[in-house]
Image (cartoon, rainbow over all chains, first blue to last red; front, side, top):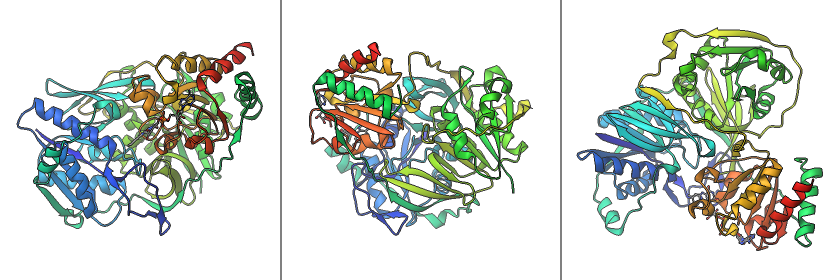
Amino acid sequence: MQLYICVKHVPDSAANITIVEKNRIDENLTFLLNPYDEHAVTEAVRIKDNLPGSEIIAVCLGKDDAEKTLRSALAMGADRGLLIASDKNHDSIETAQALKAAIEQDGNPGLIFTGKESIDAEGMQTMFRIGALFDFPVATNVVRLDIESGRAVVDSALSGGTANTYELSFPCVIGAGRGLNTPRYPTFPDVVKSKKKPVKKIAFPDLKIEPSTAGMNIVELEPLLQSRDPKEITGDAGEIAETIMRILKDEAKVI
Amino acid sequence: MMKNIGLIIELDNGKIKETNFGMITLAREKDTELFAVVMDADAASVKEDLESFGITKIVEVCLPKDRQSNPVVRAKAIIKVIKTYNICAIFGLSTAMGKDLLPRIAALLEAPLVMDCYAVDLEQNLVKTSQYSGKTIATIKITGDVLVFGVRPNAVEPVKAQASARIWILKLDETSLVSKGFRVIKTSEVDESTNINLAEADVIIAGGRGMKNGDNFTLLSKCAEKLTAAVGASRVAVDSGWVPYSMQVGQTGEKVSPLVYIACGISGSIQHFAGMKTSGMVIAINTDKNSAIMSNCDYYVKADALEIIPELTKLLEND
Ligand SMILES: Cc1cc2nc3c(=O)[nH]c(=O)nc-3n(C[C@H](O)[C@H](O)[C@H](O)COP(=O)(O)OP(=O)(O)OC[C@H]3O[C@@H](n4cnc5c(N)ncnc54)[C@H](O)[C@@H]3O)c2cc1C
């Protein structure tokens, strides 16, 4: 089976974000493989272990620099990479169109993974758009995936530690959630090996994507500043508890 | 021109969840006709509540019992409502249910979608959401025939506006109810009586490494019970195996906006803030005055959380 993993090159979550030209960020910072995509790669490797002969292909839409993220996915166990190179930022409609076109051109997907969201744009929708374009079933926030008699049985997590169980026929699209597995971080030899794995570059315009009439464009980014003015609560434990009680009652009005 | 706006109402045991009212308030602009879409109850039973927030049309969608919990079927049913009533913008909650439903609708319609949004301007088609793990606010211009919005629970204060509503019943033909290659095997029953939903809670008491072990989290849950609060946790508390992942607040956990967030033994990392930054009031209890959270909160207590919380519980018990 061909397992495709859509991976995204995202700013390190601990990095400070600086806004430039009103609606973009200064990209002069550390970028990493999106954390949820790590679960996707790890899961694909697990599936491949059980289905020998499978191939794992990591696909990324991004700037040239995103090759680093593809290499991370290769170090974690993907066999080869596809980089759809574009200097622009694309919304999730175009992103899904590009990923679909590249996958379709490349092979025959049995399973397509994404992360349940990317930690930069937090759009939570690319997997569904890919599924709709291919007409494949989709499940997101998947925290368990079993292959049973030729179908994928998944737990799609809800809040409170509960989940719905869905059965999807192949080919299907899976948005990986955090409970799915423990990411398998590469060893030094894995990293060395990944440098030799093939990455094919495709220019975005070569995919000849028909522009959608619908779109989402960021017109402005502003730093989310906190203007909290911390006040200290002092006293012994009993006094402090009384003050908190009073604040909850009179100020926050939640009691 | 009058715009028809759809609102997907989330119910819990046949009752409207409070968070819907903030969503309705957000969608209520001038020259809008508000259509509430109810899939899990009879419209008559929720009519009065919806009217008090300005809903003028209620569409009750009848789904066969066995397909009611299928998100693919639900998405198709909503699309049918959109087409039938000429709806140009559809709102739902960015809850676990919404995250499995709204993107399906947007994908099938190739419509723009912004999840976790908290401000919408339907004249200019602008919407605000946070990005880069809560470090920035993005204003997004959306274009499309139908616009889809996932509203962050609790982000908008509900404001009443009395109206009177008509009810329509929409029956769906079998063909619109197929979900190719997708079957629901089991849906979880959440016991809401014991488990207050983190994302929708008004008050959250969260614990981090400073709680020292899993047993000490019972101190938090006892206090939470008295406050009708939910218990949250930092990633360290989750990764240490003290509490389940479902309790994690932060960038890779739940994003919450309660009225009050009480952080006990949590340092206030960037990734933790990403999930609770938009809380109304933040109270930090921490032994170290130099922890980041102490300079980014409304009230701070320099003390041992394991001493303060039981005192607070005692007071609440006697209240
Ligand atoms: C990609 C990525 C994603 C992440 N996602 C998340 C996420 O979603 N959520 C999250 O929380 N973290 C996340 N993290 C982890 C984050 O970076 C921090 O490591 C974590 O939030 C720290 O948890 P903490 O505050 O409990 O622990 P610490 O940072 O160790 O803080 C413990 C605090 O407890 C105080 N303390 C100790 N004893 C007591 C006591 N008796 N009473 C009161 N205070 C006491 C200490 O002074 C200290 O401030 C993520 C990290 C990465 C790299």
